Amino acid sequence: MSRRGTAEKRTAKSDPIFRNRLVNMVVNRILKDRKKSLAYQILYRAVKKIQQKTETNPLLVLRQAIRRVTPNIGVKTRHNKKGSTRKVPNEIGSKQGRALAIRWLLEASQKRPGRNMAFKLSSELVDAAKGSGGAIRKKEATHRMAEANRALAHFR
Image 1 (tube, rainbow, N blue to C red):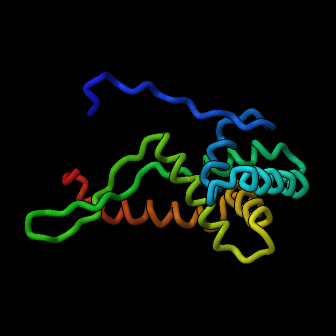
Image 2: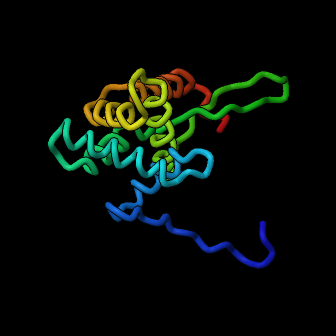
Protein backbone atom coordinates (compact mmCIF):
# COMPACT_ATOMS: atom_id res chain seq x y z
CA MET A 1 0.00 0.00 0.00
CA SER A 2 1.31 3.42 -0.91
CA ARG A 3 1.93 5.97 1.82
CA ARG A 4 1.63 8.87 -0.58
CA GLY A 5 -2.06 8.38 -1.23
CA THR A 6 -4.26 6.38 -3.51
CA ALA A 7 -3.31 5.89 -7.13
CA GLU A 8 -5.75 7.46 -9.55
CA LYS A 9 -7.79 5.10 -11.70
CA ARG A 10 -6.73 5.09 -15.31
CA THR A 11 -9.43 4.70 -17.91
CA ALA A 12 -8.71 2.49 -20.89
CA LYS A 13 -8.01 4.40 -24.08
CA SER A 14 -10.12 3.90 -27.17
CA ASP A 15 -8.84 2.64 -30.51
CA PRO A 16 -8.28 5.05 -33.44
CA ILE A 17 -10.84 3.67 -35.91
CA PHE A 18 -13.90 2.54 -33.90
CA ARG A 19 -13.29 4.82 -30.88
CA ASN A 20 -14.18 1.90 -28.64
CA ARG A 21 -12.53 0.88 -25.35
CA LEU A 22 -13.49 -2.77 -25.73
CA VAL A 23 -11.67 -2.99 -29.07
CA ASN A 24 -8.57 -1.52 -27.42
CA MET A 25 -8.78 -4.06 -24.59
CA VAL A 26 -8.88 -6.91 -27.12
CA VAL A 27 -5.94 -5.40 -29.05
CA ASN A 28 -3.88 -5.17 -25.86
CA ARG A 29 -4.51 -8.86 -25.20
CA ILE A 30 -3.57 -9.86 -28.78
CA LEU A 31 -0.35 -7.88 -28.39
CA LYS A 32 2.88 -9.89 -28.63
CA ASP A 33 6.48 -8.66 -28.53
CA ARG A 34 5.43 -4.98 -28.38
CA LYS A 35 3.97 -5.11 -31.94
CA LYS A 36 0.79 -3.13 -31.43
CA SER A 37 0.32 -2.19 -35.08
CA LEU A 38 0.28 -5.90 -35.98
CA ALA A 39 -2.29 -6.53 -33.23
CA TYR A 40 -4.48 -3.74 -34.67
CA GLN A 41 -4.11 -5.27 -38.16
CA ILE A 42 -5.20 -8.69 -36.89
CA LEU A 43 -8.26 -7.31 -35.13
CA TYR A 44 -9.33 -5.02 -37.98
CA ARG A 45 -9.03 -7.87 -40.50
CA ALA A 46 -11.09 -10.07 -38.19
CA VAL A 47 -13.70 -7.31 -37.91
CA LYS A 48 -13.81 -7.02 -41.71
CA LYS A 49 -14.32 -10.80 -42.03
CA ILE A 50 -17.13 -10.65 -39.42
CA GLN A 51 -18.75 -7.87 -41.48
CA GLN A 52 -18.60 -10.08 -44.58
CA LYS A 53 -19.88 -13.22 -42.80
CA THR A 54 -22.75 -11.81 -40.78
CA GLU A 55 -23.58 -8.59 -42.67
CA THR A 56 -24.25 -6.88 -39.33
CA ASN A 57 -22.30 -4.39 -37.25
CA PRO A 58 -19.10 -6.25 -36.22
CA LEU A 59 -18.84 -4.30 -32.95
CA LEU A 60 -22.23 -5.68 -31.92
CA VAL A 61 -20.97 -9.20 -32.67
CA LEU A 62 -17.82 -8.51 -30.59
CA ARG A 63 -19.90 -7.17 -27.67
CA GLN A 64 -22.34 -10.08 -27.88
CA ALA A 65 -19.49 -12.62 -27.95
CA ILE A 66 -17.80 -11.10 -24.91
CA ARG A 67 -21.13 -10.87 -23.05
CA ARG A 68 -21.88 -14.54 -23.76
CA VAL A 69 -18.42 -15.73 -22.68
CA THR A 70 -18.21 -13.61 -19.49
CA PRO A 71 -18.42 -15.91 -16.43
CA ASN A 72 -20.54 -15.07 -13.37
CA ILE A 73 -18.80 -17.49 -11.01
CA GLY A 74 -15.38 -19.11 -10.89
CA VAL A 75 -13.27 -21.26 -8.62
CA LYS A 76 -10.33 -20.24 -6.49
CA THR A 77 -7.85 -22.71 -5.00
CA ARG A 78 -7.66 -22.66 -1.21
CA HIS A 79 -5.21 -24.59 0.97
CA ASN A 80 -6.08 -25.79 4.45
CA LYS A 81 -3.83 -26.60 7.40
CA LYS A 82 -3.70 -30.32 6.59
CA GLY A 83 -2.19 -29.63 3.18
CA SER A 84 -5.13 -30.51 0.97
CA THR A 85 -6.32 -28.07 -1.67
CA ARG A 86 -9.92 -27.23 -2.43
CA LYS A 87 -11.46 -25.38 -5.33
CA VAL A 88 -13.80 -22.90 -3.69
CA PRO A 89 -16.44 -21.20 -5.85
CA ASN A 90 -16.49 -17.39 -5.78
CA GLU A 91 -18.31 -14.69 -7.69
CA ILE A 92 -16.47 -12.76 -10.38
CA GLY A 93 -16.85 -9.01 -10.83
CA SER A 94 -17.68 -7.40 -14.15
CA LYS A 95 -14.16 -6.14 -14.93
CA GLN A 96 -12.46 -9.41 -14.08
CA GLY A 97 -15.17 -11.31 -15.95
CA ARG A 98 -14.64 -9.21 -19.07
CA ALA A 99 -10.87 -9.74 -18.86
CA LEU A 100 -11.38 -13.51 -18.52
CA ALA A 101 -13.80 -13.51 -21.46
CA ILE A 102 -11.32 -11.72 -23.73
CA ARG A 103 -8.52 -14.05 -22.65
CA TRP A 104 -10.65 -17.17 -23.24
CA LEU A 105 -11.77 -15.92 -26.66
CA LEU A 106 -8.19 -15.32 -27.77
CA GLU A 107 -6.96 -18.66 -26.40
CA ALA A 108 -9.78 -20.52 -28.15
CA SER A 109 -9.12 -18.72 -31.42
CA GLN A 110 -5.38 -19.53 -31.23
CA LYS A 111 -6.18 -23.23 -30.76
CA ARG A 112 -8.47 -23.28 -33.82
CA PRO A 113 -7.16 -24.74 -37.06
CA GLY A 114 -7.07 -22.17 -39.81
CA ARG A 115 -5.10 -19.93 -42.10
CA ASN A 116 -4.23 -16.91 -40.00
CA MET A 117 -5.11 -15.33 -36.68
CA ALA A 118 -7.59 -12.84 -38.17
CA PHE A 119 -9.58 -15.68 -39.76
CA LYS A 120 -9.51 -17.77 -36.57
CA LEU A 121 -10.47 -14.81 -34.37
CA SER A 122 -13.38 -13.85 -36.60
CA SER A 123 -14.67 -17.44 -36.62
CA GLU A 124 -14.39 -17.71 -32.83
CA LEU A 125 -16.17 -14.37 -32.26
CA VAL A 126 -19.05 -15.32 -34.57
CA ASP A 127 -19.36 -18.74 -32.89
CA ALA A 128 -19.28 -17.20 -29.41
CA ALA A 129 -21.94 -14.68 -30.38
CA LYS A 130 -24.12 -17.59 -31.54
CA GLY A 131 -23.45 -19.51 -28.30
CA SER A 132 -20.94 -22.16 -29.39
CA GLY A 133 -17.17 -22.39 -29.71
CA GLY A 134 -14.18 -23.09 -27.49
CA ALA A 135 -14.56 -20.05 -25.25
CA ILE A 136 -18.19 -20.92 -24.47
CA ARG A 137 -17.11 -24.47 -23.59
CA LYS A 138 -14.48 -23.04 -21.23
CA LYS A 139 -17.11 -20.88 -19.50
CA GLU A 140 -19.46 -23.84 -19.15
CA ALA A 141 -16.65 -25.99 -17.71
CA THR A 142 -15.86 -23.29 -15.15
CA HIS A 143 -19.53 -23.01 -14.18
CA ARG A 144 -19.80 -26.81 -13.88
CA MET A 145 -16.74 -26.93 -11.62
CA ALA A 146 -18.14 -24.14 -9.43
CA GLU A 147 -21.50 -25.93 -9.24
CA ALA A 148 -19.83 -29.23 -8.31
CA ASN A 149 -17.89 -27.55 -5.49
CA ARG A 150 -20.83 -25.51 -4.21
CA ALA A 151 -20.67 -27.36 -0.89
CA LEU A 152 -17.27 -25.73 -0.25
CA ALA A 153 -18.60 -22.19 -0.59
CA HIS A 154 -18.37 -21.60 3.17
CA PHE A 155 -14.52 -21.72 2.88
CA ARG A 156 -14.65 -18.43 1.02
